[in-house]
Image 1: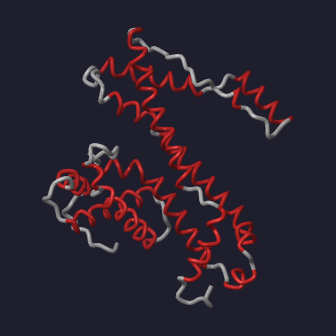
Image 2 (image 1 turned 90 degrees about the horizontal axis):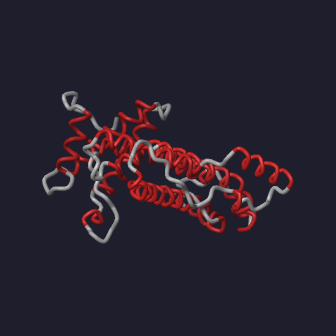
Image 3 (image 1 turned 180 degrees about the horizontal axis):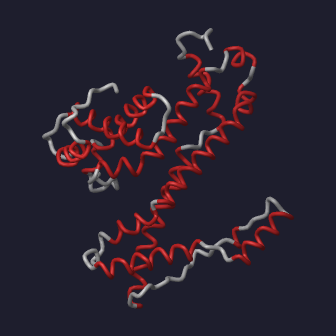
Length: 284
């Protein structure tokens, strides 16, 4: 570990300190950063993300820096911005840890790959050749990361509905909360499920015409609300909750695709930039 942890300080106490002080003027910047580092190190070690202590150190420093910037972002205090404050730093880190691990691996892999790109390739390949040289690897890696990000997003859909209900007038009514939650989840499942008969039609169509437009065979944007032991007058309210979560999901999907999409015409500049910054260009 790059920092030495006080054995008397519990991880939960670190998280509580950050939660209680980060949005005040009464906190030690270095201490907050170290606590973020320790929390990230502990959680990633628990998940066995890496095979070496150095990797845990590097990842914890990388993410602690991003977390500190996020926690001190002034947009959280601007009413015109849509950046919420983080109420529980421990839960927030748990929620983003795997996605950030994927993002970190992505960055490291690019740096390593570009670093090993010998100068003769840069001299012998023109820009178009460089782009084509890297296109398969980049597209494959981007698609893999986007897929992992989306899988993580789908896993938190139940939490998104619970978060919305915790802001509702029914948050203290356990039975109504539970029934509304089930109604939202069942509605979501029904709205995103394609009947087997339609799946079979899509399968047959793509076998004959791989590039066929299947948008008309996909689930309709209209959806039927499934009520689970709740009054019918709450149908519109469930639609409202559904649309809020749906918007969040769509925004996250767009963000993931944008974040991990590297325009092919920019690849050559990335290669050259990484090559130029190498200390010893002869040792690859």
